[in-house]
Length: 225
Length: 34
Image 1 (tube, each protein chain N blue to C red):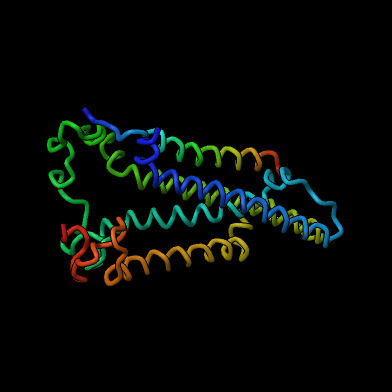
Image 2 (cartoon, chains in turn red, blue):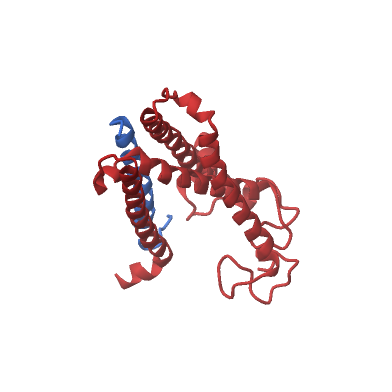
C-alpha cells in the first residue's frame, strides 16, 4: 500500500485536488444560483437539483474543453514546432514525426515495447497517436456538452424573460457561447506560452517541468541529458 | 514482455473512469432536460 501511494503520488495528489475543487465549485455554484433565484422571486432549489442541472454542466464542461484543448495543442504542436532552450521542446532540427528507429516502433521495437508499437498498419498508427486521439476526443465531447447544456440554460433564461427559444445551431453561433469559450481559451494559451518561454530562463530546482538549475539557457532538457 | 509500473493501470482507469463518469452524468442531465 505504501509503495502504491509513493509510486502514484502525483496522480493521486491531482485526483484529490480535482475532487475537492469540483465539490467546492458545486457548493459555490449552488449558493450563487439560489441567490439569483430568490432575487427573481423564484422558489429555491436543492443542492442535488443544482448538481443535476444544465447550469452546473455548462460551467464544468466549458472548463474541461479548454483544458483538454490546451494539452491537445501542446502535445501536437511540440511535434512540429520547437522553442530553443525550453525543456518543453525538442531540440531545433528534430521537428517532425521522427524515424521508426528513434521512435522504437516496428522492426526497431524492443522486446518490452507496448504491443501497439510492435504492430503494423492502422493499429500502429492509432497507437502512435493515441494520446492526441484521446485528448482530442475528450476536448470535442466536452465542447459539445458545453454547447448543449449552454443551449438549455440560455433557453431557461429566455423563457423567464419571455424571449423565443434558440436552436442548438443558433446558440453555437451566439456571442454567449463564444464568450464562454474564448475567455477560457485565452487563459490556456497564455499559460502554455509563458510556460514555454519562462522555462528557458527560470528554474524550479528538481521539478520534472524544469531544466536542472545549472543547465545553460540555450539548451533544452533533452539536449542537456 | 511489457511490464506496467505498480498501480499505474489502477491510476489510468481512475482518471479514465472519472472522465467517462463525468460524460455519462452530463448525458443523463441533458437527456432529462434539466
